[in-house]
Amino acid sequence: MNVQTKDIPTRAANREIENIRDEDDLKKTIMIGHDYVDTIFVRDAARFMELTGITRQKMAIIVAPVMSSGHLYSLLNGNRKPNKREHVIAIGLALGLSVDDMTILLKDSGDRGLDTRRSIGDTVVIYGISNKLSLIDINDMLHEVGADYVLFD
Image 1: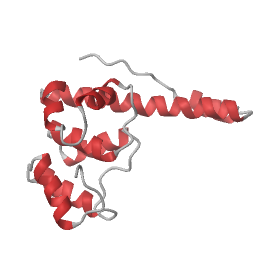
Image 2: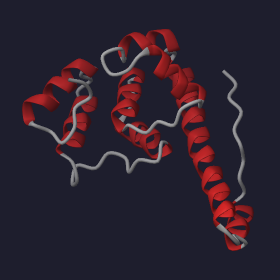
Image 3: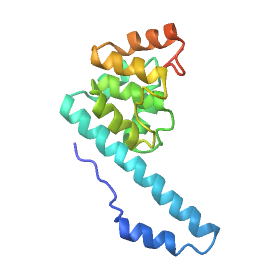
């Protein structure tokens, strides 16, 4: 699987920020940042899919309770920004990612990653990953403990 990424050198990005003159320049700079985050997410999701051997079709079946296959494909193609952490967690669970890899995928989407100090939900997700629980089992546990988020209702 070959996913192209945009390279934004740090010095060039910093120089661009230093040269912001008006609101239009600021908006352009912000859009570059969003494109970069989306591209990192797409690249790493594709890499994890290749490593785990999970196809888009199989992933669509696994994450069906959380999102439609069309929405999943839009995220994986980079046509939509992954703005719900529950969607990213569902993708990571479908891929069978480790806690470290799940954190990478969450951070790629612009999220803070898994943090047991901030979230009961994150504690449940980490427990579920560590014990190789299914997405549905983890979601049931999130409901049971009254976590700060659930993957689906």
